[in-house]
Image 1 (tube, rainbow, N blue to C red):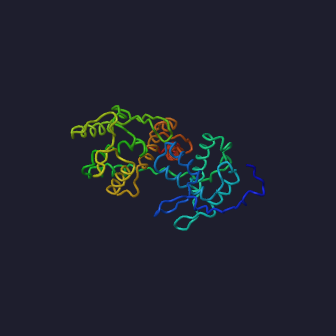
Image 2: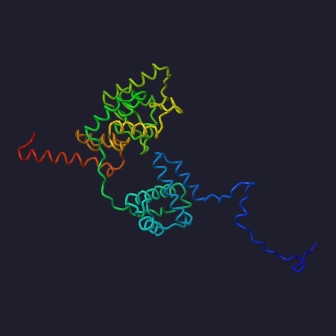
Image 3: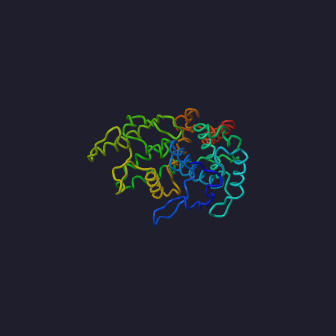
Length: 335
């Protein structure tokens, strides 16, 4: 049968409600469709070995950027990122109503730089050129190292003696932290990571394996802690966690990132040291290495600092101490 244009029924255009296209079951709340750009963010977060705090920061900052811009990744240009930096600097305010600090602005820009570097490498068909390459970070004075004084360290060791059930574990924990390990690195340690003298860290923040030599006293404390666990009936293997939880809900399981922070905060309260946190021991270790005269390049290898600029904060104190000593030698008042 042949049809002519006159015999065909009139075509009617029926407008569709966009919301009606998202089907829901009775009683369910309609949700907007997932932003395809966010899917790439989640893939980025999964593919990187980020510490918990770093992951939260990246997620927050990338979500803020995607809320600000509706452009797809292939549409972004350096001028858009420059406008976003102005937005962070001039419009975003803290809960207290203050403008963001330069460090906070840099945290947002650094998250974008890391993400778009990954995108341009992983999906060059989407982003041929990284749009963040020309965006500069704000100049921020180098923050001083938050090292503990010898007196404060003495109070930490004394506070450990006041602990009950967790005394042996927390003593071993502080000995490990006082060798410059990050909390996230301690979480990953197994019994097999300790060979009686060194700690082997296969997974680090910089993705480079690291060997950490332990002092004799620290080796003995760690060995005694593991022996105590064996005497209490625990079967230790090379894959057993080096540090275990004493929390009622997680007893015997691997000590978590938050568990480490809670243990150190408790020690800080007993030692009457305000805002004591695991990184305090890392700062102290790095500073002490330089005060002992360890070559900065060797010290960076021991601490696992990839950036020479980031490590610079620890050299300031040792250089100041050396300058003071040189002054007294020069005027003949050397002690």
